[in-house]
Length: 380
Ligand SMILES: NC(=O)c1ccc[n+]([C@@H]2O[C@H](COP(=O)([O-])OP(=O)(O)OC[C@H]3O[C@@H](n4cnc5c(N)ncnc54)[C@H](OP(=O)(O)O)[C@@H]3O)[C@@H](O)[C@H]2O)c1
Image (cartoon, rainbow, N blue to C red):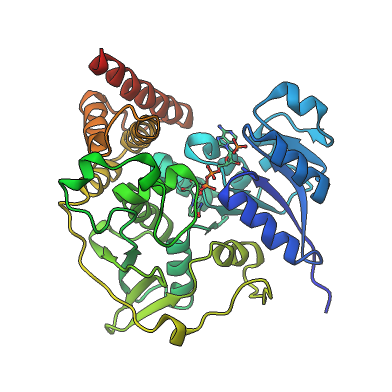
């Protein structure tokens, strides 16, 4: 039977999720067609992608380079997200870049595949309101929320708890004392997943796990006290749900982002991808689960505490964390100073309770700049 072709826009096509999205599209030329691609600054890779996928529309942050690329410039990411020729929008940008495009895509009735989780950290309430108003579900791409979504199919009213797994990140076997001297290079070596730089550092601090708790809260309308995190080193169980009768359903698979990406693109159909290695439980042998040691991860409780507050707090958290990660990668602060940077910004934030989207974006920018200028002051 012939399948209708899904026409895809990839926002952030040169990143880790973006390139893996193109891998999935490459594997199914009769199901997915790339209509629009957008990059930030990696023009060389974008040019190769244009050569291979011949998108009708392209965008990048470098206006001069954009003029020399084939494909029509559609102005902004928001306009790309709402193009009439597009069915599915993969939001695989990072930080606040995905917020307005996600909103526009929801309003335009697109299938929205959301990897850029910061959108929900900054504006979970507003974005979920828009999603409800337009009767348009957001499909998670992040592997843990995707696993929960898949476990929840057919179970919506009978769920007691969500159990999110965490690998523990690059420093899970270090003592708190050892963490003071870890380098960006060490932090970028994630034990089980290969990802972009920001999310890899956020995984080492467990800010990323706090973000997933907040993301799951918004996506699945689940109270925070019904969301747990357990450390699971192998990253084979991507997450679990506990149903009303105490049964736990788990989602297992290799730690390969192409699985959740593909499911978001093909939903509700499941399709076999011969390029993905089938999962073999015997090869894995054993699975372990441990309680999280909160002394190793001071950012986790901090990020949950701030991120669950209403109004502009999530945007302040997001901007402060983004600045702290950048400063750590630039060797300007120590790994153990990341929570201090976040706390410093939070202490100065005067929140707005019912902000609009512009105020949310401004708050994230304010938090980013405040964190960076405080660090400049302290190094003088
Ligand atoms: N990587 C993973 O496995 C993974 C898993 C789960 C969730 N996520 C989430 O998915 C999102 C993307 O992660 P990633 O690891 O793929 O990040 P990444 O590798 O850093 O890629 C980010 C992409 O966004 C583009 N970009 C950055 N800033 C932009 C801006 N201001 N305007 C337009 N485009 C911009 C980048 O372009 P250039 O590179 O051309 O500058 C790149 O294409 C993040 O929110 C992350 O938390 C990632």
